[in-house]
Image 1 (tube, helix red, strand yellow):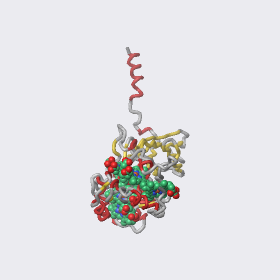
Image 2: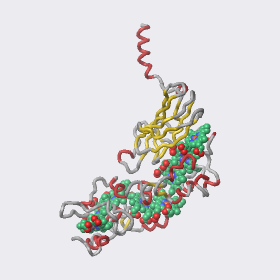
Image 3: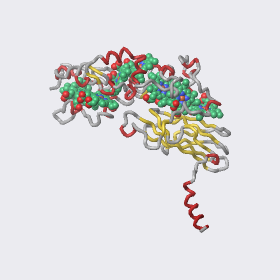
Image 4: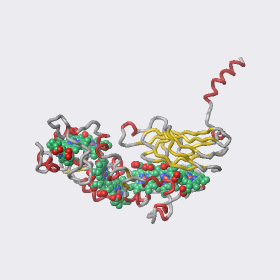
Length: 328
Ligand code: HEC
Ligand code: HEC
Ligand code: HEC
Ligand code: HEC
Ligand code: HEC
Ligand code: HEC
Ligand code: HEC
Ligand code: HEC
């Protein structure tokens, strides 16, 4: 009988909580495990060292080293920033303690992307990761409340947001108010949750782009997501790799919803090739690359399919780019 009970206990052992962290030398305290968040190209990773000391720590994202942190001997908190991507990111911090024992800690974070069909809803078991609304230990070393200088900081590093969010302006194209570190223009510290922005996003954009939005709203043919006020589905509010801080190159942006659309819908040439939709200069917008947005307004237009000119006049429309050299 006793033998049987013992055997049962043995089987139950793996089911007992494994991560009563007190006996682990190293632990990720930020971000939380199985959290999801909207957007975001970087994440702060803060580890707490409870026992032992480490000379260096490595941060892995999806199994690849992103950061190798040196000279941390004696530190209790180790702060860093990593790049993340839409979907699940597996973040691991590991190191060899001074007594030679390896130690590591791992969390998974899901980044939502509104324009990625596989990544626009978090998987089961993930809960929202809202950093500023939960209590944290950061304030012992960092300024955690907005300061007077944050409204219009003279230089970036004057913003109290800078230390933790400096990568946000590290992009080829950055939106005016973000570039100026006027973060509080959109993020209200008194909102619930803290720093929440207006919704739908159009309301937030309207504060500064009201005239433009008003003019588009008067036009007859409005694009679905524009009419719903979903500006931030296509535009990052901060910055991106493309002009107008679109979340992808316009053609790829359109294709993430209009899956499979090709240049065939414009014209198929005698050799069977479709009309180009990228990779050529845009004749109507000097300096830009041809894209779906060269012909269609992403917002609104007086013409069918939000085209830039009436398509009833086929030649007229084509000549908007081809001049009199129209090839048919
Ligand atoms: C034009 C309005 C606007 C400005 C200015 C702005 N934000 Fe945001 N921010 C947003 C919106 C909207 C979101 C919601 C997530 C999304 O749609 O990408 C967001 C999300 C975030 C997030 C979480 C996800 C992410 O993208 O990293 C952080 C962190 C953030 N903002 C920090 C800042 C900081 C720091 C500044 C100043 C340098 C700033 N924001 C300026 C509108 C703004
Ligand atoms: C024991 C003190 C201490 C604590 C606690 C602490 N930090 Fe830090 N943190 C620092 C120091 C020191 C720096 C480097 C100073 C600088 O770059 O301005 C830093 C830098 C950072 C950076 C920038 C890292 C980089 O690579 O640029 C981030 C992000 C950060 N901390 C986030 C946090 C967060 C989030 C918390 C709370 C979970 C936190 N820190 C708690 C001391 C601390
Ligand atoms: C001590 C570091 C620290 C400081 C200072 C800081 N943040 Fe954050 N913030 C974070 C961390 C950590 C997150 C979680 C996402 C990440 O890792 O980037 C976050 C997330 C956010 C988010 C997304 C919503 C949320 O609560 O998770 C917004 C918006 C934001 N910060 C705005 C600001 C603004 C505006 C300021 C300046 C007034 C600021 N932050 C100052 C560390 C900081
Ligand atoms: C606090 C004021 C403010 C808010 C709120 C704001 N913007 Fe802007 N925006 C500006 C300023 C200033 C410029 C001009 C400087 C520049 O090009 O960045 C600008 C420029 C732009 C441009 C480029 C326009 C051009 O013709 O070059 C786009 C696109 C844009 N914003 C999108 C948005 C979207 C989308 C939102 C809502 C998420 C938004 N903005 C909210 C102030 C704001
Ligand atoms: C379907 C995606 C999409 C949506 C939704 C969208 N935009 Fe745009 N927007 C774009 C693209 C792509 C460009 C660049 C090409 C162009 O100018 O047509 C652009 C350009 C802009 C510009 C600068 C060029 C111009 O025409 O003045 C502004 C300002 C702007 N958008 C603001 C907004 C605002 C505000 C909203 C929400 C009310 C919004 N956008 C919704 C995709 C979108
Ligand atoms: C977030 C998803 C989304 C994105 C991104 C998007 N669209 Fe759309 N689009 C829609 C929806 C929804 C409709 C309305 C449904 C319909 O009428 O078929 C629509 C309608 C259209 C129509 C009218 C179709 C018709 O039959 O009347 C055109 C043209 C169009 N989109 C072009 C574009 C272009 C060009 C881009 C890129 C600048 C783009 N869309 C990006 C969702 C999107
Ligand atoms: C060279 C100009 C041009 C470009 C570039 C272009 N379109 Fe079109 N698009 C048109 C014209 C013209 C029509 C009307 C076709 C018709 O009525 O037969 C149209 C119609 C549409 C329609 C509605 C009818 C349909 O076929 O479903 C959608 C949706 C659409 N385009 C999406 C896109 C997307 C997405 C891209 C980029 C991948 C794109 N277009 C690139 C000219 C263009
Ligand atoms: C937004 C501008 C734009 C519009 C509108 C447009 N095209 Fe084009 N088209 C281009 C560009 C750019 C190329 C690539 C030219 C090159 O290869 O240098 C091209 C190439 C072509 C070619 C291949 C031969 C050549 O000139 O290189 C044909 C044929 C063509 N277009 C027909 C049409 C027809 C028919 C229409 C109207 C339904 C039309 N296009 C509307 C921009 C446009």
